[in-house]
Image (cartoon, rainbow, N blue to C red; front, side):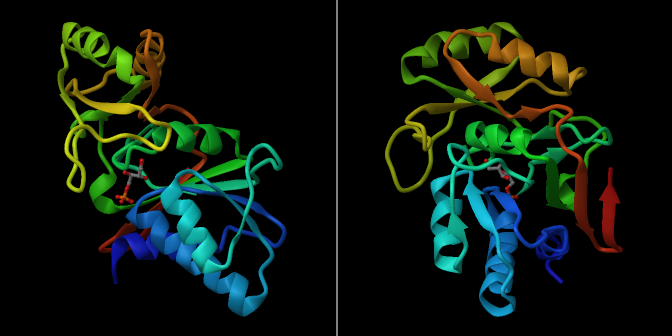
Amino acid sequence: MNLKKMAALRAVDEIGDGDVVGLGTGSTTHYFIEELGRRVREEGLEVMGVPTSYQSMFLAAESGIKVTSLAEHDVDVAVDGADEVDPDLNLIKGGGAAHTLEKIVDSSAGSFIVIVDESKLVERLGAFPLPVEVIPAACRPVKLKLESMGASVDIRSSEGKDGPVVTDNGNFVLDASFGVIDDPGAMESRLNNIPGVVENGIFAGIADMVIAGTSEGLKILR
Ligand SMILES: O=C(CO)[C@H](O)[C@H](O)COP(=O)(O)O
């Protein structure tokens, strides 16, 4: 079976009737949202979803999940993917440039569950370039600051549009390769302290549970 899907389907079992669910972004959460929607439509599960991106908002609506927001509801359980997960459940996220709203929703949740395939499990964070969302006017000074801290930095661009990726919040993303990150919590705070940085992709100490699909079956980390 597809290992991302395996983790996603297991996560749906953690959702109870009446829950407000944080809906993460990416290909792994895609499977989660689809299955959650199927249970809503076919089994009468009553949930509301708080999307973390336009991607998850559109998919939730298509799947039959009622959409709400943090302005109206607290989140009971958030389910989200990750780009890297270390043994202490620190994460790198933002491969889909959605990490700012993801961090707001995931950190506000009563419980935050991460779903990944085994390729995301690492001993130490840092092989995946760290996404840093910046206000466009701050792009150059923040890039220079990150370089002065030892990173090599790319302004993220993508297919489908010439020029930089523009996030759901109207900002740019810098991908900063620092190598191994020794102290994820300290690095997370330090980066968010740079003027013009909106949010970086380190999620230190907020995940409660990781469900990983592996070739040997499901692996649960708490
Ligand atoms: O952080 C994210 C989006 O900003 C994603 O959750 C992360 O990139 C993992 O994506 P995928 O499930 O497609 O591997």
